[in-house]
Image 1 (cartoon, one colour):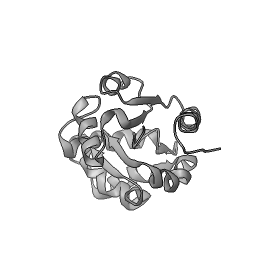
Image 2 (cartoon, rainbow, N blue to C red):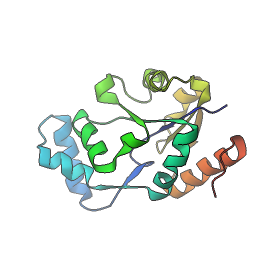
Image 3 (spheres, rainbow, N blue to C red):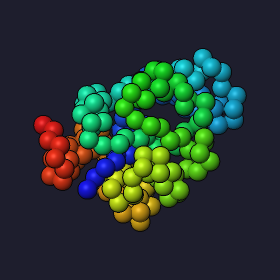
Image 4 (cartoon, rainbow, N blue to C red):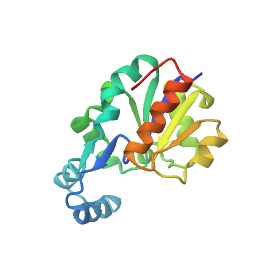
Amino acid sequence: MIKGILFDWHGVLVESNGKNDERIKEIYSKLLQNTATEDEVIEIVTAYEKYEPLWEILPLLKKHFKLCVVNNGPRATYNYWDEYFGYSKFMDFINSEVEGVEKPQPEIYKIACERLGVNADEVIYMDDNFGFPEETEKLNMKFIHWDSTESGFNKFKDYLNNNTEIKIS
Protein backbone atom coordinates (compact mmCIF):
# COMPACT_ATOMS: atom_id res chain seq x y z
CA MET A 1 0.00 0.00 0.00
CA ILE A 2 1.37 3.38 -1.00
CA LYS A 3 1.61 5.83 1.90
CA GLY A 4 4.19 8.31 0.65
CA ILE A 5 5.28 10.08 -2.51
CA LEU A 6 8.77 11.47 -3.05
CA PHE A 7 9.30 14.03 -5.80
CA ASP A 8 12.40 15.33 -7.48
CA TRP A 9 12.23 19.13 -7.63
CA HIS A 10 13.72 20.18 -11.00
CA GLY A 11 12.04 18.45 -13.92
CA VAL A 12 9.12 17.10 -11.89
CA LEU A 13 7.55 19.78 -9.67
CA VAL A 14 9.21 22.72 -11.42
CA GLU A 15 10.69 23.23 -14.85
CA SER A 16 12.89 25.89 -16.38
CA ASN A 17 11.06 28.74 -18.06
CA GLY A 18 13.79 28.59 -20.74
CA LYS A 19 14.89 32.18 -20.26
CA ASN A 20 18.56 32.97 -19.71
CA ASP A 21 19.68 29.34 -19.45
CA GLU A 22 23.33 30.36 -19.84
CA ARG A 23 22.99 32.93 -17.07
CA ILE A 24 21.40 30.32 -14.78
CA LYS A 25 24.30 27.92 -15.40
CA GLU A 26 26.71 30.72 -14.54
CA ILE A 27 24.90 31.43 -11.26
CA TYR A 28 24.79 27.73 -10.36
CA SER A 29 28.57 27.65 -10.76
CA LYS A 30 28.81 30.58 -8.37
CA LEU A 31 26.48 28.82 -5.93
CA LEU A 32 28.74 25.79 -5.89
CA GLN A 33 31.63 28.10 -4.99
CA ASN A 34 29.50 29.94 -2.37
CA THR A 35 29.99 33.24 -4.20
CA ALA A 36 26.45 33.91 -5.50
CA THR A 37 24.64 36.99 -4.23
CA GLU A 38 21.13 36.91 -2.81
CA ASP A 39 19.85 38.58 -5.98
CA GLU A 40 21.46 35.82 -8.05
CA VAL A 41 19.83 33.13 -5.91
CA ILE A 42 16.46 34.81 -6.47
CA GLU A 43 17.24 34.98 -10.20
CA ILE A 44 17.68 31.20 -10.23
CA VAL A 45 14.50 30.52 -8.28
CA THR A 46 12.41 32.77 -10.52
CA ALA A 47 13.82 31.07 -13.64
CA TYR A 48 11.58 28.08 -12.83
CA GLU A 49 7.84 27.59 -13.08
CA LYS A 50 5.50 25.14 -11.42
CA TYR A 51 4.46 22.16 -13.50
CA GLU A 52 0.82 23.18 -13.02
CA PRO A 53 -0.96 19.85 -13.72
CA LEU A 54 0.96 18.27 -10.83
CA TRP A 55 0.57 21.26 -8.50
CA GLU A 56 -3.19 21.25 -9.14
CA ILE A 57 -3.52 17.77 -7.63
CA LEU A 58 -1.20 18.32 -4.64
CA PRO A 59 -4.14 19.17 -2.31
CA LEU A 60 -5.77 15.84 -3.22
CA LEU A 61 -2.50 13.94 -2.86
CA LYS A 62 -1.86 15.53 0.53
CA LYS A 63 -5.19 14.15 1.80
CA HIS A 64 -4.13 10.58 1.01
CA PHE A 65 -0.33 10.46 1.12
CA LYS A 66 2.64 11.94 2.91
CA LEU A 67 4.63 14.04 0.44
CA CYS A 68 8.27 15.08 0.27
CA VAL A 69 10.74 16.58 -2.19
CA VAL A 70 14.18 14.95 -2.43
CA ASN A 71 16.51 17.48 -4.05
CA ASN A 72 20.19 17.60 -4.92
CA GLY A 73 20.73 21.31 -4.75
CA PRO A 74 22.58 24.12 -3.07
CA ARG A 75 21.54 25.09 0.44
CA ALA A 76 21.35 28.74 -0.65
CA THR A 77 18.21 28.11 -2.74
CA TYR A 78 16.45 25.97 -0.12
CA ASN A 79 14.34 28.64 1.66
CA TYR A 80 13.69 30.62 -1.50
CA TRP A 81 11.98 27.66 -3.16
CA ASP A 82 9.34 27.74 -0.44
CA GLU A 83 9.00 31.53 -0.46
CA TYR A 84 8.45 31.53 -4.21
CA PHE A 85 6.51 28.28 -4.73
CA GLY A 86 4.95 27.57 -1.32
CA TYR A 87 5.72 23.85 -1.31
CA SER A 88 5.53 23.61 2.51
CA LYS A 89 1.71 23.80 2.33
CA PHE A 90 1.85 20.33 0.84
CA MET A 91 5.12 18.61 1.62
CA ASP A 92 8.44 18.37 3.37
CA PHE A 93 11.69 19.09 1.52
CA ILE A 94 14.92 17.13 1.84
CA ASN A 95 17.92 19.08 0.54
CA SER A 96 21.10 17.14 -0.16
CA GLU A 97 23.46 19.86 0.99
CA VAL A 98 21.55 20.33 4.25
CA GLU A 99 21.47 16.56 4.88
CA GLY A 100 25.06 15.93 3.76
CA VAL A 101 24.11 13.12 1.37
CA GLU A 102 23.09 13.21 -2.30
CA LYS A 103 20.91 11.23 -4.65
CA PRO A 104 21.30 8.46 -5.64
CA GLN A 105 22.81 7.39 -2.30
CA PRO A 106 20.16 5.32 -0.49
CA GLU A 107 20.63 7.29 2.73
CA ILE A 108 18.86 10.35 1.32
CA TYR A 109 15.76 8.30 0.48
CA LYS A 110 15.90 6.69 3.92
CA ILE A 111 16.01 10.17 5.50
CA ALA A 112 12.93 11.17 3.49
CA CYS A 113 11.03 8.02 4.48
CA GLU A 114 11.98 8.48 8.12
CA ARG A 115 10.86 12.11 8.03
CA LEU A 116 7.50 11.02 6.59
CA GLY A 117 7.14 8.05 8.94
CA VAL A 118 6.76 5.51 6.12
CA ASN A 119 8.68 2.45 4.97
CA ALA A 120 10.56 2.60 1.68
CA ASP A 121 8.36 -0.12 0.18
CA GLU A 122 5.34 2.15 0.77
CA VAL A 123 6.71 4.95 -1.41
CA ILE A 124 6.56 6.13 -5.01
CA TYR A 125 9.60 8.12 -6.14
CA MET A 126 9.58 10.28 -9.27
CA ASP A 127 12.63 11.77 -10.95
CA ASP A 128 13.58 13.02 -14.40
CA ASN A 129 17.04 11.46 -14.04
CA PHE A 130 16.91 7.86 -15.20
CA GLY A 131 20.17 7.15 -13.36
CA PHE A 132 18.42 6.99 -9.99
CA PRO A 133 16.05 3.99 -10.12
CA GLU A 134 18.63 1.39 -9.14
CA GLU A 135 19.06 2.74 -5.61
CA THR A 136 15.36 3.35 -5.07
CA GLU A 137 14.46 -0.09 -6.39
CA LYS A 138 17.01 -1.66 -4.00
CA LEU A 139 14.92 -0.07 -1.26
CA ASN A 140 11.76 -1.53 -2.86
CA MET A 141 10.39 1.89 -3.81
CA LYS A 142 8.26 2.27 -6.90
CA PHE A 143 10.22 4.45 -9.35
CA ILE A 144 8.50 6.51 -12.05
CA HIS A 145 10.79 8.08 -14.63
CA TRP A 146 9.71 11.53 -15.82
CA ASP A 147 11.29 11.43 -19.27
CA SER A 148 9.22 14.56 -19.92
CA THR A 149 6.81 16.35 -17.62
CA GLU A 150 3.74 15.31 -19.62
CA SER A 151 4.83 11.68 -20.03
CA GLY A 152 5.92 11.38 -16.40
CA PHE A 153 2.69 12.91 -15.18
CA ASN A 154 0.67 10.47 -17.29
CA LYS A 155 2.66 7.50 -15.91
CA PHE A 156 2.09 8.81 -12.38
CA LYS A 157 -1.66 9.22 -12.93
CA ASP A 158 -1.88 5.74 -14.46
CA TYR A 159 -0.05 4.25 -11.49
CA LEU A 160 -2.33 6.00 -8.99
CA ASN A 161 -5.49 5.09 -10.93
CA ASN A 162 -4.49 1.42 -11.17
CA ASN A 163 -2.89 0.88 -7.75
CA THR A 164 -4.58 3.20 -5.25
CA GLU A 165 -8.03 4.47 -4.36
CA ILE A 166 -7.14 7.83 -5.94
CA LYS A 167 -8.59 8.42 -9.40
CA ILE A 168 -7.19 11.28 -11.47
CA SER A 169 -8.40 12.11 -14.96
